[in-house]
Length: 384
Image (cartoon, rainbow, N blue to C red; front, side, top):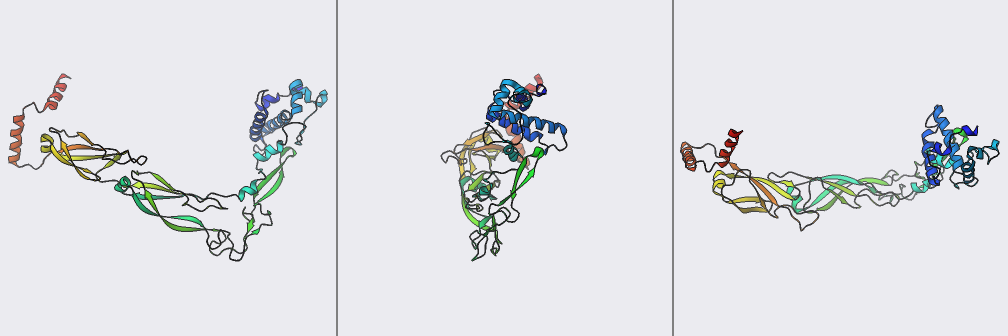
């Protein structure tokens, strides 16, 4: 029968040079995939699970693996006078030490390590609190001081977090012995026993029983409280910025550090300016006369108005820049963007007949030399 068996290395999908860790990893993956509890009433999966266990039982044992590598299946077949057969008892005669098949299945299907109870009583970091803050465009640019209000979880001051009323204290749970967990055993396929550890229902996993709860927190040891806090917003803040106030969030448990307050900044739009990175963008209307003759115009900035000399013959849509009149970088206070403005020529409406005649006379006096774009456009049109 031995010669009809599938090669154990092929069964686990590993090479003959696989080390201890590779053999163990391959078995864990396949055992989880084909375990009967995962594949109920699946005869094919059950067969493969047996093959995987058989292969692992041999290849994880140093002596059996050596015999198998030298003589194949005959080396471990008792009917062939070789090393001997295998069993599922979990015994080892020189393999990988304390790591056996029950350890693997226990880990895969619900087992917990002996350190579970200590982890339940370990320090737990407090939760972060998230809130939103709306500020004006100017407040974002120049920075500001704001007060925020939010709700967080705090340690109950009445009982100092114990959950017990005055002159009393929590008692150790008699069901779990203070571990917070209870362990049960069940028999799985092929006679193996799997330990299952779950939170104790009596103490809800705390390991403590509070017979006389604190009247303030009702035994929780924590209370919800509304708080206010003043925060500083740096110059250059932008819409969508997230700020963190370390340690201002909810209290931790079992001596754990408190969480943070995460503030999402919402910047209200400005009636004149838009933002492009650290640059300010705006559009400024100018008169027909200012565009034609040029001259000094006023340009609005967030720090007041500035004078700007507009060149003669400025066309609508022309773009100009005022250096370093933009927004300070939130990362580097020495860096500041520019103010970029585009001009639009405002065409006069509601002209009197006298004004119209003056414009007609002006247009005739200009001739074609002042309409080069118009003339060029129609020349392109005729050529096409």
